[in-house]
Length: 297
Image (cartoon, rainbow, N blue to C red; front, side, top):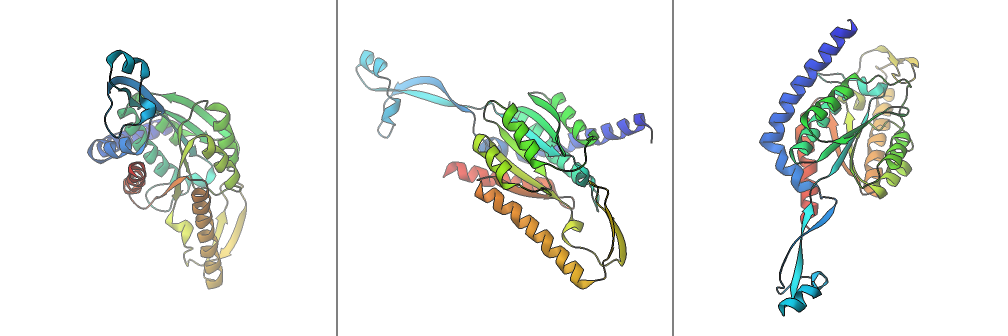
């Protein structure tokens, strides 16, 4: 495939993602998005007379003195947010055993979140990372900006193999001056996770989207198979008919998944698990409903 053919293929996928994401956002997603995220603060709106139950700290004493009766300051939430999609484009992201690779699943989730954000008047930015923070697009508004982000996710070719959550978190801490909402989209096949994610979560609001493939959880019984690590190139022949080996592999992968959950819980990070073999919208929907319920408590 030539470079031009590759670009055309990618853009075709972007256009399909745009149509799907726009429909999903319009039909089911926009309201959940708006109710799930707080703005950066409160803006003064107007004055009104004090009513029983109002907070005394909002009384404006100058207006109260002029009017002869207590008046309070009204505020409205500053809705504009900075949303940053931090997407893992390391070698393992290109794995997929069904219809989608993990990178394509991440791109779809990014498109849904991106169109939801711009539809709500928010800015969207992008960080692509692998072994290092590879490519950064500052938060901005507009449909064309979201399309560029989706295209960049699908076309990224990092120069260094491997994954570093630490490098991604350090870059975001250095770069983002104001509090932002960060969607960390990765399979989280990296260590350590606790310290970098915890440090990032203390400065920004972090939401983790763990992307997985069903073949990563359960090793099929397929005889002798040569496995290649996409990030290091290391190869090994494995006899998948060995029941003990399959059990050990499944135990290792459960431990990895449980470790990600534990790190997120410890650091107050909301987590959704996205898979290449099921609808990502449902997983994102449940995440936002959970956040909306937390806001109303």
